[in-house]
Image 1 (tube, helix red, strand yellow):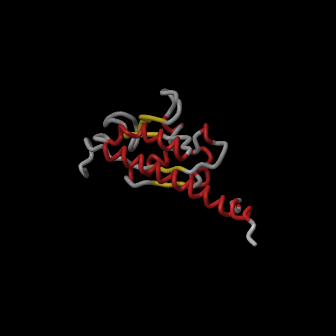
Image 2: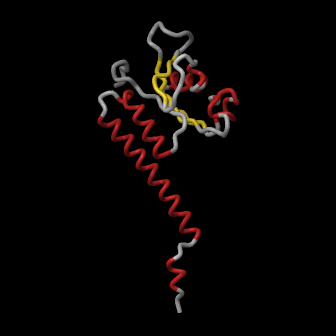
Image 3: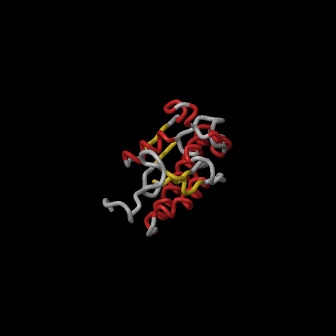
Amino acid sequence: MIDIRECLVPKPQEKHRSARATADRLALDALYEIAKSFAAAPDPVAEVPQIFNVLSSFLDLRHGVLATLAEPGEGVGVNPYVIAATAFQRSPEAPASDVLPDAVARIVFRSGVPFVSFDLAAEFGEDAVPKRLRDAGQTLIAVPLRDPERSHFV
């Protein structure tokens, strides 16, 4: 004889798969929405604030930052950068390094390739972690975007 209750009550392993499948689906939905935004945009850089909203909604983004190279002649040092947009409230007078570690900015701006750090504090030191995020380990994903107006590769 079959106990119908065993068929109706999901087993813990099935619940886990279901939660994981839901998380995977949310990630795919987020990537789809981002790809849609970029594909239709004449200026992909202008779409980044909207993409921060998508990432915040689907993937719990806590600290989105759009950094751009400073205009020629502005700033000091190699590849000076400015913060163009954030996914949180930020004082415009605060230094750019308060929200994006200088070491990470140098790597991405010089190489032009994406960069991933699974533990920012372990790889760059505790001072590299933005003050507002020092309560827990942080993963950082930095992706360079080319401005079609300035890039000779486009």
